[in-house]
Image (tube, rainbow, N blue to C red; front, side, top):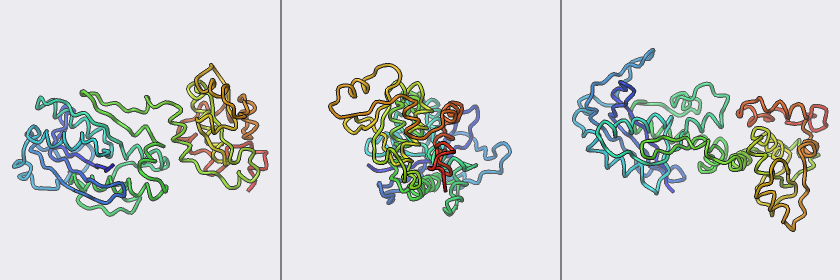
Length: 340
């Protein structure tokens, strides 16, 4: 599977509708080797408004005359459709929801059928993996990664920078891009029949937990006296759905104590049976494998998690939960595991 990174520039966004003047892209393989890079200029058939409220004048990548000589959006519609709807590519953009809506507004303006494709947002990906960053603009992220900036408002170059950010994040976290997408499912958008959907709400709690578990590394200090080192745990589906924040917190602790989180019953050593009966609970009951059934209190004791802390998690943001324990273990303060 190849990756397509794209970016759009608009002449203006009057009335909330972007008048596209360029769509640039970089096509790369899964190792980020560039296969093709191109900037497609578009005659916006509208005047240029290059000053945003409270911002400096935007400098175009080309003289205005070059845009005026270019084909209009309706003439390039098939080109864009073939590019973005290609089943052989995974599409990425930075703050891609904006670019998707620019395309939809142009389809409306020129009375063309809506484009239907899915795309992943590197801005959301960056927020997920680097929550302490105060600025998620493409230029600022590039500066933080020491990625050189030049001609920042040429679409194909912005697409190149978007690819560079994705590549740098993969290197920083030692993960493939596909793996990062699994860990951060909320960066996925689809557009179908004119509707833009962020699919985080449709991703099951189970998939979110599995994706997150891949992102958490064991803590060598916690593993020394761990009761669950190399053991595999899981929860009932009802618990994951009704108590997602606490489930996320428990996965954090399980992984950092050297345990594994899996929904494959054949791998389980411990199972949290909580809430209504579900398919997973039934499979555990029917399994010939010896699986220890736990209630919440028993699981908290196994993981040395303070009950008050566990209750407090309900009021925390998902970001705080996901990164709790990076600097301090998610355990009781009076346990030997907390010693330096």
